[in-house]
Image: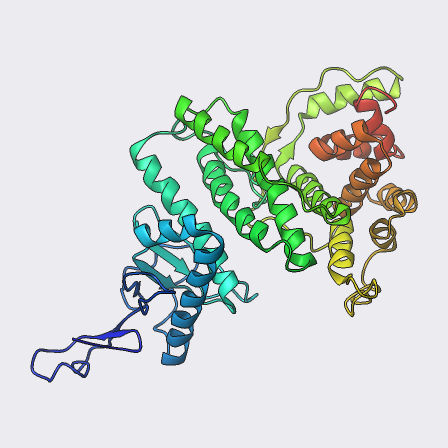
Length: 425
């Protein structure tokens, strides 16, 4: 056998050992070295049984792509060794195989692991070493937790899909939420190391810190955890408490806006209020009475897909405006990017005019109570204007507010939310 440029060539035993045997393709391993995994990691782009992931495996890499993956891994390893050495040690212990995946049509990098293939990480070849480092840490977290779960139960088996994982649009069972929260703890940690690079990195850190903390808070309140599971989640919560905010108020506010907008959208997609309960509550509204006790909604999963990252609505406008801003002149070339395509109320909210935005959102909902973007806008604007109790209702039970507004023609969603909250803020 002979290694060259990170490749290990198989022979048929009759040659000189320097060329692949007829009908065989050489296996590849990542080049070991000071800034690379200490043992050569197999790049598995040939095994016919490697289709265990949510994306199809890539066909055999061409030489240029294989060399690029080798180079990027060395650079990512160097970055992790310098910034997050504990994760490097974990990878050195657990990583044995990289399985290249076919990237999605969006071109966004993807990664995955399988409990049935300990030591293997599947990923598409990213554009830069920092992204590769992020993918490796994300999947290392899944690998570590999967190994722990093989030894120690942290939660009851099974269980209904009823939890909100901020990175998903569909409800998840407790085990999936635990896996996602632990993986995104690693994601947030990578962005924490990069938060001083630029405003995008600061936003990503703030956003994933907030979202992971919300997932951990759900886990902490779950009766499905074992005693060991509660101790594990308490450790995650302690780690998050030790991480300070970015110190940039605009970044932190934008992260909360995008997170809150995602919560509203998840509830609208998956929560279904009891029909008889909606009728009773609507009757109390018409009679001018306080709202009766409200039953918990049914959780009816919507389509399984990743959660929106703020592509539409107020949160998209906020994120776009934040990331277009530079320290030098206040606006970047992207500031005028899509202002003509963004709703006027969304632009007003992103510009800090929550009152003007609220007027626009109310107008839109008067014409269409099912306008999800407008309902998100009302929730965010209410919070920005100090209407915290109403904002809480709009964020946690927008399904009920929407159902009532459909039963009560002309009812204002902010007024309905304020009434459900028990009166004026």
